[in-house]
Image (tube, rainbow, N blue to C red; front, side, top):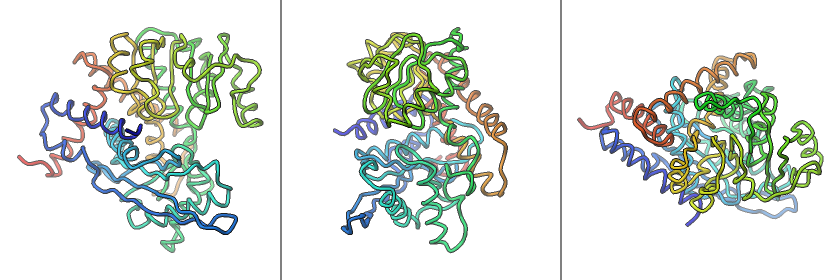
Length: 418
């Protein structure tokens, strides 16, 4: 069973349990268990040596009760249909949890290792993917964004290709673009900033001083790397980080600005000299105040959960904790900030970018960051309070809050039988 299949099964199971416990119309599950539309495409790409190689791409449109489908596109060798389905389902819940975000849930992916492609091959793949799904997306239908191994440059190629197909400028079709073609200030760090806002509020709620708190971050890509910068700038002490090559640890705190420079020069942080080299497995089990898994799904499992020593887990990645691990961590009294709220900063600022794009203006970064705070922190507090009232886990609470909003909207729209 692939990691994506595991994530899909545990997500569906929890949705079913929450629907039953909430007592909402059971038909809601029929709208949640499977996506509304699944698109599988073949993308032939001319390689630099003149040969043609085909890649499989996916776009899953899960639920649009609240508005257009919304979700990122990941380029990863392990991307498969079940993983994309699971992530699209989580996006539906994520957008439902944040009040005032009028989006449904979707997700895209291409099975590819982008590190093995040249820049020109990557551009041809990006344009080929958007051509293949162009009939199914639109500014009021489905709005893609970046995800694992995709970035503003890739979004720029995709937006340009879509505009070429449409024979008119429609850069607002995609969020997470460079500022020069209608991107939003603050979007690059949005997921990480939202993660920090949630972690700060979590510390406040359980009596930890965020400034001086010890933080461990798994992953050093866009989310993990920016989280390290933002946590450091806000006064937290980042004691360990990791990337695909390995992990490093310094109990006295890592010099994050120097580490960023080192990573840019050498392409990894694993060999950074002013720290102890440890494994990714050891990193997860370090004693700390905040553990932020910002890599891939199913990293915290029933095997390693008993050894987790963090006081707070702030999930920067999608689905980093398995269902079995959730129960163990809850029994240990660890406060989990679930992915559907902790990493929702990206979709919040994507919404703000979409608004700016449709009105053809641009806010200051301070305005964007303030709007992000005003949307994500109250949503987290609502989940926390609901969990306390019901004496349930934070993840179950988050799912219930999102499902209740979706059920209400489905009822209003006439989707549910009386």
